[in-house]
Amino acid sequence: MIQTDDLFLGAFGLVRGGEISTVEVKNGSGRPMCIFHISGSDMSGVEREYHKGVVSVDLRLLRSEVQRLKNTAFDAMRRERGR
Image (cartoon, rainbow, N blue to C red; front, side):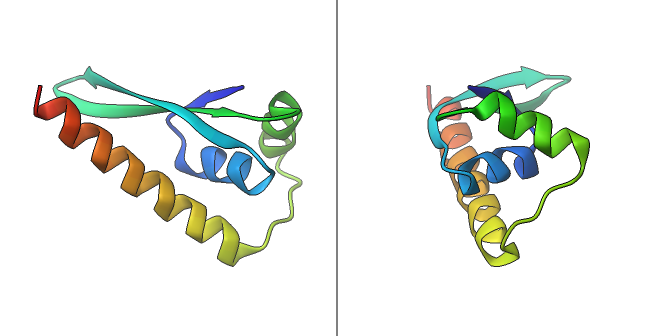
């Protein structure tokens, strides 16, 4: 499982077959921040590959997954604010 607030790492995990399992909203420094939990097979390998910097992806898919994470984050923050 990948736990990250990095949209690009999260999107990379989704492109590599992961799924969003949960989204945590934390309030740090007065600003809400989302932590994405991405689960799937070999997510630790996906994270290592990402941090090594030698990755190749379809940029349209990556962009689509970044947008999906942004929408998910804003939905989670709205729900949290409504509590």
